[in-house]
Amino acid sequence: MSFRLILLRHGESIWNQENLFTGWTDVDLSERGKEEALRAGERLKEAGFRFDEAYTSVLKRSIRTLWSVLDRLDQMWIPTVCAWQLNERHYGALQGLDKGQTAHKYGEDQVLLWRRSYDVRPPLLSPNDPRHPRHDPRYASVASKDLPAAESLKDTLARVIPYWEGELAPRILAGKQLIVVAHGNSLRALVKYLDGLSDEEIVRLNIPTGMPLIYELDSDLRAVSHRYLASDDEVARASASVAAQGRAR
Ligand SMILES: O=C(O)[C@H](O)COP(=O)(O)O
Image 1: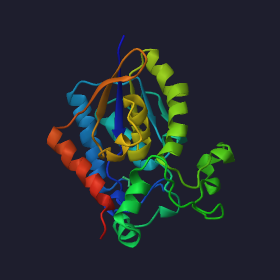
Image 2 (image 1 turned 60 degrees about the horizontal axis):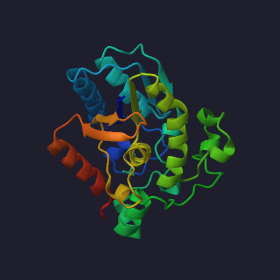
Image 3 (image 1 turned 90 degrees about the horizontal axis):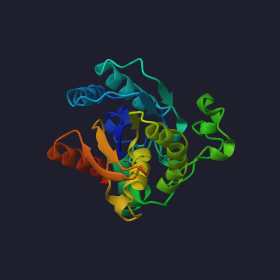
């Protein structure tokens, strides 16, 4: 028995465009990001995909991307779940800072550790900071011990994988075709798990915005293969540009 799962990172956001650490900040798509989202829907349509259910985060850059995809597929009616567990990694006190200027100030190696290492946490947001998620009504039903002030990828994985095991995997095993629209690092956490990547291998993985990623899974839901619905050139260029966001400026 084999299964298929479609993953998609949201289109470019306004803060992606401005090269700012975003995390749980709820910024919208840029004009280019809106086009990327529609294009992702077109690519899925051209390839003949249909979905039974859709999952996304509680952040509007992902939600709006999902809306555009489902609009293009004429499937806006399918059940859709917004789950905080699929949010971007929480970038703590780095949120709102310019990635290039941060690299200039602290060094590119430190920014690479913050952005791509498995277990280094960015500096924490103070609980009194109005940006802390405990002040945001959308997280009112989340236990305070689960609300992060900053996350490493390991912390992100510790909320994404239980959600995968408890909610997504059972639906896939029940035969449902799912699309999961999420974020660069919540998807890196899921990909690390599905592909069994080591803590060192995950450092080199950069997921581009707006390019559908198709996973073929075995009966244990481990990855057999994956491919982007885009040319190798497009994927290589877009992934390199994500990696380059941490260069000193
Ligand atoms: O939160 C952010 O800034 C981006 O969505 C992902 O950022 P990264 O590529 O720097 O991890």
